[in-house]
Length: 116
Image 1: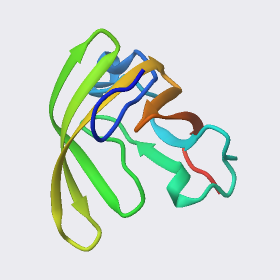
Image 2: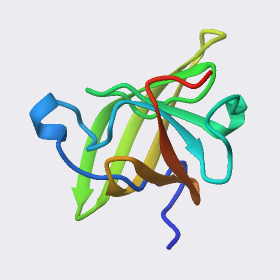
Image 3: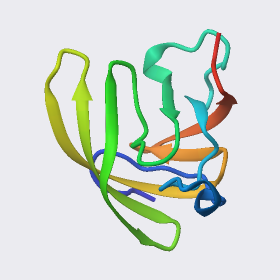
């Protein structure tokens, strides 16, 4: 399945209890096929709850608008770059369960609150 533009995610539920916008476990996710310990920045995404828009190294995103069709979450995000710039984008995320998602056609799995 191809979901448009910037992002696609697979994970799912319990967000309402914590006030999170996405039903994912908080923490670090790595691209499937990569190891958790020592994963490169390009293989890592993080989710820290609330309005967090799935971050990558040197970019922090916040969800400004969210719509949902079944397991597909469409996000409009405001991302702050480490260099200080701001970028607005859209992401569509398919959530399969709380510890697994797909983004930009790649699957990611939960590794824990940190990777060392």
